[in-house]
Length: 138
Image (spheres, rainbow, N blue to C red):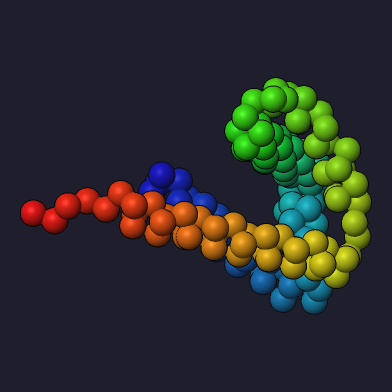
């Protein structure tokens, strides 16, 4: 993991350096795809776009499975995880169509409130459990 972190850090620094150099030469700021096209041509841009797309698809698949497994654990295996995945896909697809983050602020605020309530409930039950089942001090 340390080696991968070092390689990743070096790559990001190199990308920023190349971006700055290209900006000095051309006078405009370029995206990842435009930098690859500038350096490697159209094939480089295509390879970058395909690899970024596959990476994002992989992240999204893992995230959907994570949501489905946790939801399935909450509802005590009434609905299998694969059904939850199928039910989640339309909602997540609609959420991805939202063009402005401003529209997500309300949903994020509701999520933050629910998280705060959940943490409070966990703390209350933890303290009650500690009071009822306190270990003896020897």
